[in-house]
Length: 152
View 1 (spheres, helix red, strand yellow):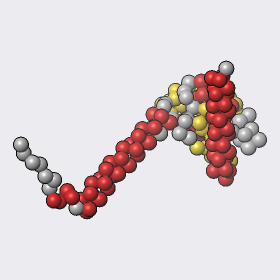
View 2 (cartoon, one colour):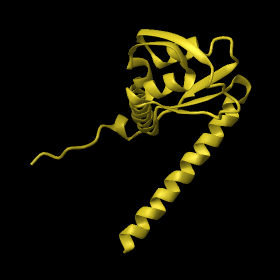
View 3 (cartoon, rainbow, N blue to C red):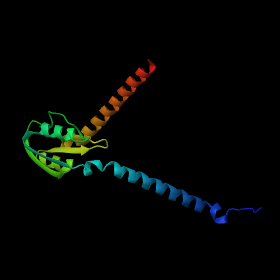
View 4 (spheres, rainbow, N blue to C red):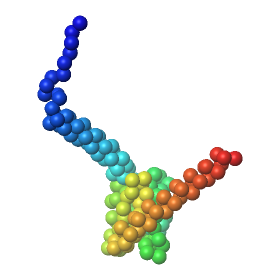
C-alpha cells in the first residue's frame, strides 16, 4: 500500500493564499458575467412600430403591451400628454425614449427588473430611491398576504 504525502509547496501559506485568490477571482468573474446577461434585455429587445401624433402615454402603453417593460413616472413632472411622432424600426427602448424626450429635460433609468423610471434629469437619482422603496413595500405587503393566506 502506497503512502501519499502532500507536496511541501502545497502546505505553504503563500500557495494557499494564491489558491484562495484564484477561487475568489473566478467567483467574481462568474457573478459579473451573470450580471451582464441580466441587463441585456433592454438592449436586445427591438421595437418596430410607427406612432403619428400620439400622446407620449399612448406610446409608453404600446411599448408595455409588446414587451416586459413597465414605466414609472409622476404626471406632474413628466409631460406625458404631449403629442409625438415616433418611427421605430429595430429600435431599442433607449433609442425611442431618447427620441421622444429630446430637449425636454426628461431623464430615464432602466432598472434590473425592466422597470423604466422617467423623471426630470435633475431628480432621477432621488426618484430611483423612491421607486425602490415602493417596490420593497409592495413585496412586504405581498409576503404578508401570502403568509395570512397560508395560515388559513
